[in-house]
Image 1 (tube, helix red, strand yellow):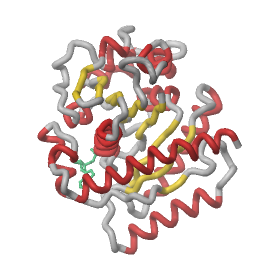
Image 2: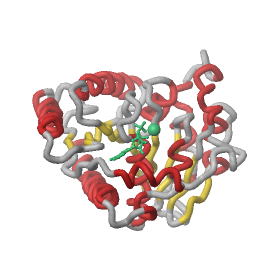
Image 3: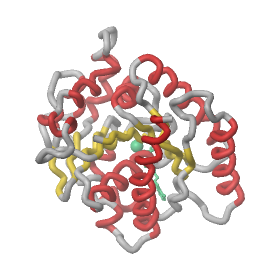
Image 4: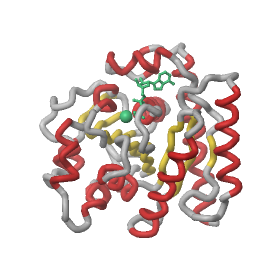
Length: 279
Ligand code: ADP
Ligand code: MG
């Protein structure tokens, strides 16, 4: 199974919008996808059409209560399952304080799960997408310890690169200590205002940064800025309150067009990543 955490410690950059619409786009392309909501705000859960608290077992029980992924999973239809979040997830940090190995709990649950282990088996998953909260705390660490890839949504503004280095540092630590397979898949520019100078410059700066620092650390050497940019589109902001992905809410929108393009680029990138690993 391919596993991707959508992470950035800044809020409001497009993590949840990207997690849900990418998950649905991949499912529509025929994959079996598991969307894990690790943000206590539960926006991804709602956006995917699942009522937080409507299912007795959530991500909190998986991390703290010993529940399995199979017990927590909710079928959201058409190839998509959701591990729902709930506001009680905000207490994880405290509930697990001092517990040894607490950053690797999700990783263990995934390893123990038959549907994650064997994508080709009946009901097995091709891809897992994890929506991270806006911090680099225990929840994001659990995500990074569990996945092979990180996708970083970035909103083009002057301080965008600043946040990037903090996330890369964290990735370095996690890859050195718990998860040597961890790689930065790439950066996706969200809420992109096409035609503005700033948007173009930030895209160029991030690409230049990766090229200049290439090889410095294996976790992010060779990362890319995705060609597909997610334009600012009001339909993307409206869709969550209907519990629908952009593909159901407004299939003709720029938002649907951009996330479909991103999904095919992400699918394509799997091969490049294998090459990077082999190199
Ligand atoms: P994060 O998960 O990083 O906090 P969200 O995905 O929740 O960010 O996005 C923040 C807000 O911006 C949400 O209200 C969302 O609906 C809206 N939004 C996200 N992407 C776009 C976009 N491309 N165009 C317009 N609004 C967007
Ligand atoms: Mg979010």
